[in-house]
Length: 603
Image 1 (cartoon, helix red, strand yellow):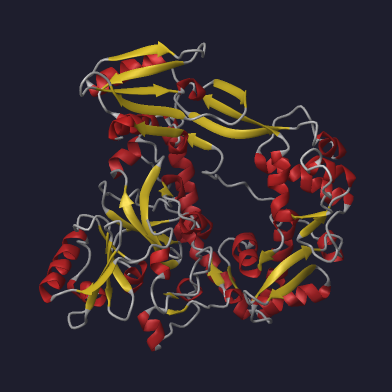
Image 2 (cartoon, helix red, strand yellow):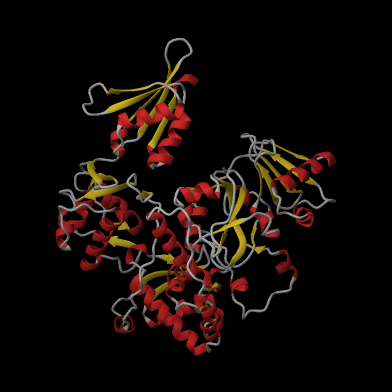
């Protein structure tokens, strides 16, 4: 909703009567909020302004301060607090807690919250109704990062196997509404530009609570130095993971009730207390071990350069032992930037401060360094990860749908695959294909010595990427940036798609086509809805027609598409375009991005 900047159409002050009405609406909409909570976001003796947007959205704020509430439909039916209001009163709304700070990247990117990304508490999935306002939090950080409306009730979520969309995000940290505030700020040190992690001052019990006025207000300037992050591993992650694994197994077996494991938290605090008393030398040693573990297991050359804060939160912290608080401020280096520069001086890594972002960046890894060679990384049990990118998995029943883009090597890139000993007749995912080209770069030592972010093109790699694509007479490139290499390499391969439903698997050449739903007028004022493209998702037209006849209590029929042998369309009486699209998503698992709707009756 606030992904892009939209100019305000009008701005005015609220009258006394309108302020009272707004307060009553907020009280009804947020039953958890007390009178003191409402006083915090709508002080009685201050001016409240309302900003009117072209799309009928109303934003209410304290004059000269932050926006506090916004109304999606302009009638009070969809009133939400902003993140600034939630940072003042964190418990104003019930909250879903993410499985980890890494999931927050998707929320800050504008994605809705999916059930697989939610951490289920030990007492089970909380009760909620559809269409109610909920906030989103990161484990170990009390400040919400987003707010939205639930898409279904808790009972419906359990029946659906905790799949699909849980919260339709209306507003999140870093969107245009957050950015529109004068003196925009963040509530604590866990908030970065592209990710939110645990707040070290909140998560670490060994740190004293700051009693200053700034801490009492819960906000400070957003220019936080990212290299001073310190994050504590919470015991709930271990429990949540066990809960999630057991819940998935139970749901797969057809059990609709989420079963929780026995509480084992009573044994864990002792171990955590033992790790809290680490000396400075022990913390330095632990930092060294976590860095080497990360360089061996998760830091790939193709991802470089990366910010120091990203290295810390996404790579180093996940490598710490369970129950350990890894606090850079308790080490001899005190700051992440100084520590990375020390490691750069030793020759293990290459790091340099970015003058624009004012943060140290990791540019390269010396994998021939004695410390790197001598270190033996620990093998960890791979966690259960549910991803919502190119592969979409819906359900675990016979109606399960999986859609994935896959790539087959073409004559252009075959020499690269053969050079690293990869099979040229196999299908590869996007990440697997990118790994092939980066393996070739590592084998041929093509990383530019003076700029680790770029790759020098030898004859084979240049032909693979550009032969036949450069206009006659134009010069061929001699180097390419790492961020462009993967996509350029994939464009030179043959794209296919794999669709599976239950035990049936089909691989077809080209990108997958969409399901097309079109409503048009027939005789007089009668409407007819047509659905085509069902075969792409392994759906039977006759079976769907029978289902829709019962669901919508209307006549349905099927017909073969002209000139397309074996492809059928379903014709449904009436204008049911939206309900039909929802049925395909909910019951057949067809991703919304693959459904194309067209209502010709509105033209």
